[in-house]
Image (cartoon, rainbow, N blue to C red; front, side, top):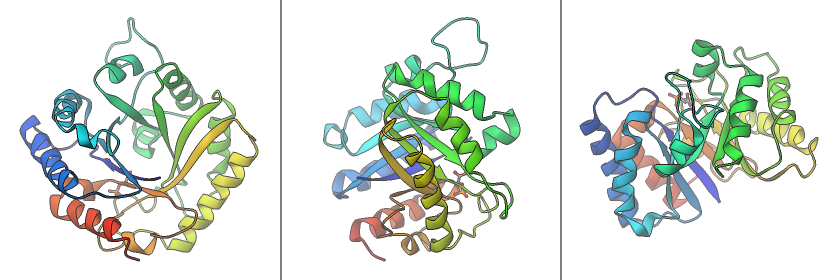
Length: 250
Ligand code: PGA
């Protein structure tokens, strides 16, 4: 099963535009069966509940479309002003949590220790982590960060590793297929150090993915999904991406 994740980040600005955007995804997905792909949408926290209510009206999409949050905290409840717990997220229908995104690392100083704590807290609620990793500058080696996270989390049934080179995020220039594959091979090698600790691992690429370029990575035997940022806010782009993966073009 492949994964297509849409990270809306801190967009759109109103509930009504969020629901409109989500509706446009759902309209396509309820009419077109995209085989072998799971679609995961990550709206801002404040819109998750309403988006979840819409999704529940489409029982046929139950195993096709899922919700992710863009962050979560490592404790279940208590005096943690401004935080949201994995349990709260599960209760409103969230299934995946994006953790360690480079913007969280940059603006909120999250490091591998914090991210590992957050991932650990997901286990109790059976939420699946989408772990972002990737280097800031092209010639850096980001695998130590990944290894540090993996060694500090418990065994998990399923994880998604999204390789996101920071130098490609938001630039409009995705990296070459070869480069994305090589980095995902490194992730695979890193995972192999942990033997059977992680049952199912999916290797994704993210960084300026759009309808124009996504096909260069399709049918790769290592990249089995994508994390889409800015293109996820443009209905036309999203629908084109759906069409491309649906037709299995490359
Ligand atoms: P982008 O964002 O597609 O806008 O580059 C990707 C991401 O930050 O996850």
